[in-house]
Image (cartoon, rainbow, N blue to C red; front, side):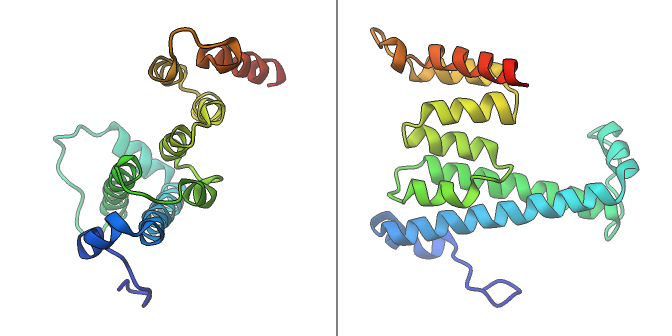
Length: 178
């Protein structure tokens, strides 16, 4: 259980059931996503409290002496590490062979900053235009959008199903309206 008394599912505890029970797998995916969104909010709060601290952490060398335990810097670094770990677990889970309700998970994270996870889910749902919109509009990563198109294009696809045509349409539409 979590410190708030909520039941916390751990994949290792329920792995056999997760493989065969799509409702349980969906619940676990949503819990991973909820953890990630809480850590995103915590990181944003910590970073907004002390922008100078953020700048100093960004400027410090990776080999620099670690911040004192209990300090704001240590708390922020731990939050960042925890967020990276949870997001990695979430992406691995979402990309794995488990059966879960992708649309339901996407609904839970649709307005979040879990951009890579949203792209992954849109892709699995064959919502390529939506995935490309996230890459272009939300994270402004044209290289990732091009790579996405390369992975999802097929020889002989029609213009309406060609991801590169979709990408160009999104790019020019977003650029013209912005």
